[in-house]
Length: 90
Length: 190
Image (cartoon, rainbow over all chains, first blue to last red; front, side, top):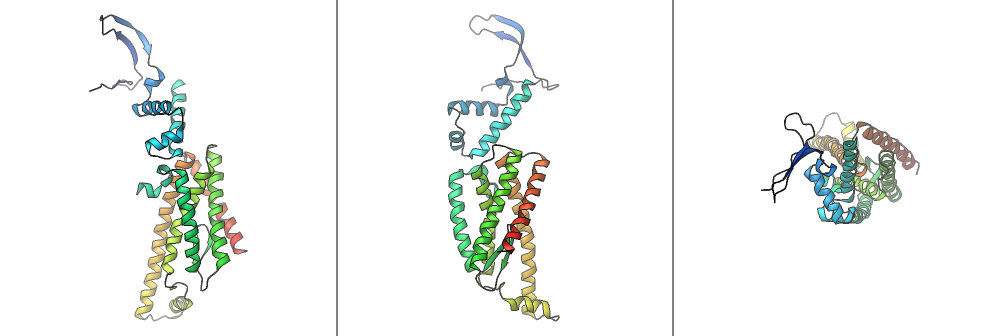
């Protein structure tokens, strides 16, 4: 089973940051405080949307056909995500 | 049920437009033969004779005014609102009216005697009572029908214009009301 990357603190719901990275080959451990990239701060559904958007070369029509929903529905999802990302940046 | 209440969310816009256009033409034709006239986008009447001009132009103006209302409200809320989606919603909204016109298939509601019998006789015979029950059931049915129409507009407009706020729907309601008044005035002066 692929473990889901937690992005929020289960206790206070604040955004988590990366403090430790490990090399699986030589077990070197790097410690620090690295903020999560914006892509990882998005929900799995939003990440999947971005991936699909990229794979269809940014064609919302093609995405709509692949997902079996209409063009305005896909466009609304994209608009909502843009707004979400703008909010995350602030 | 979800797809029936908001087809714009699920179906391809061009396929939906073709289906809506066919239904519009068939619906208008059947409304002519069923002696149905449309005096506003949310109104229908049964005439005692075929009113070709009033039915065709009434239906066309009603659909057009709905389209303009959705498009204007949509553009105010979201600049990305498309013509085809508003056209689809306005034509889809009118479909139940074409189906409702079939209530008059035996021209029962066009018959003036039915209405006069109900209005003039204080002592009802069994038949008149049945007619009255039928008429009042239809009024109740029409209220339920208008509620469903409201749900269709609410859900579809959400998809068309990505409307979320209460003010978005307030704008829509005000614009629809304005267009209902304008279209009624135009159709009555035909």
